[in-house]
Length: 89
Image 1: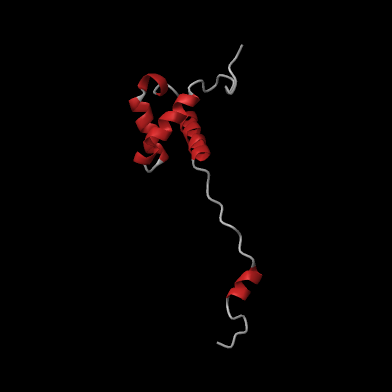
Image 2: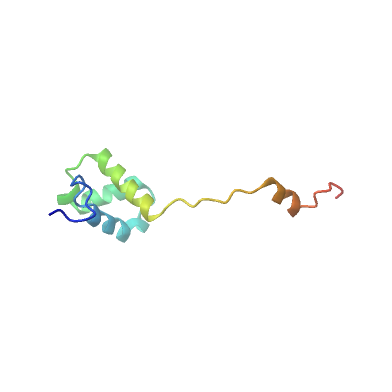
């Protein structure tokens, strides 16, 4: 019986990959540097994988870990109310 949460076997090491990314993500600025580090440090698991699909998988995990911050939209009426709004000064 297959385990729950598996992604069809395409990325059987995705849980392990996520843990590794979390443990070292702050040491690398660019995604490419992180991918290079993972491929060199965990050669047996990732080095033989094609670079582009592996990079995409790392980027997806990074987006799950650090979702982009959405700025609230400002309403034009709020901007008018925040200022004088009468144009006198």
